[in-house]
Length: 254
Image (tube, rainbow, N blue to C red; front, side, top):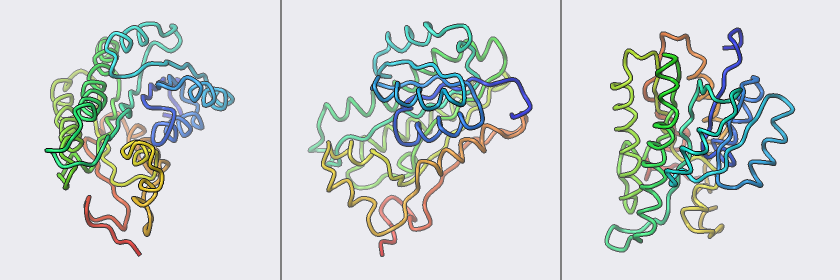
């Protein structure tokens, strides 16, 4: 990729965690960036830092808002409008309750962001990729899309849907010059648990205590490795956990 014309990458959920780490790594390699997120102040702060290394454009929208997704992507200036790399990173978990006690609002948030949001953004980007017969989509899934754990019900269902959509995209886009793959992390120390527990920082901190979890930079490294393979190589599905994690419920805490 270093010897090819400058690529343009669009990253959803770019203001924190895996999305932010990926944006920073892409900027270090001088990819042109379209950074998407809900928090304009964070987008502005990140863009200001990364614009010292590359060209950056920001889009402020919630992936749940179908009209805003299409309006925002259609508004891209010409220099940023040809998306070569789509990183479908925006996602969330809300609550950790047994199915009978689950919040309907939490269920809607997870299905709307993790599933429908991924679909909306992909739908907006794909026509250009198909027309150019070139592009690469990375869907950020989860080990929760490979197994189900107690009280994970709807979150696991949403990530199982991402796994199915990743496979479906790869099948439907076969022969169109577009690579599709998923990276499925285990426990990564980000704002994820703080969001899941609705701002309860003490409860969130306990999730990562007693072992060495993955870092956002670890996943960014894998994304970079994936998108820099030769054109005939597509990493279709990659699952990664920390050494201390064997499954969603088996973690070696010292």
